[in-house]
Length: 55
Image 1 (cartoon, rainbow, N blue to C red):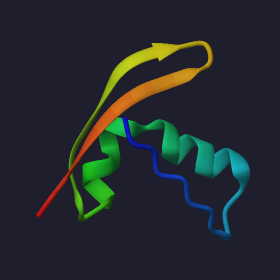
Image 2: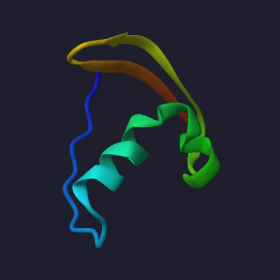
Image 3: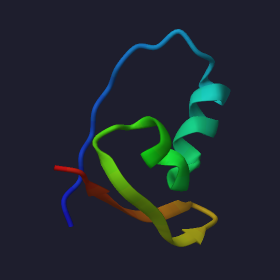
């Protein structure tokens, strides 16, 4: 499975950004290139999710 890692500076708190990133299912609502996203597995250490990219 491929991984993408990217860092950027934002004007929001760490808590706010965590809440945004954690809501995987909502990605298609605010990421125009995201055609779909779903959580495959959730566990104490995080989540495994799958996303699809729009053309």
